[in-house]
Image (cartoon, rainbow, N blue to C red):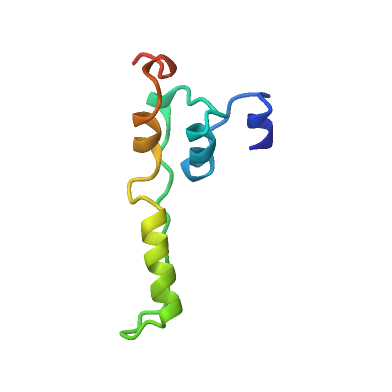
Length: 87
């Protein structure tokens, strides 16, 4: 990530890692039509009818912070058309 921010090259990175930098204008998405979807983030906890408050609070936080479809739809929606290569 540090090399990307320094302008050293091009890389495919997880959307969760690059979303903030793209939103801040520090990175520019390229080849968006070739982007591979990241594997889903999954929260695993013991199957118990009674979740502890800690697990429930973290689970709610996790669900709110990590979009189910990943960040690419948001990244592409906020990217000026000039930065998105033609398909």
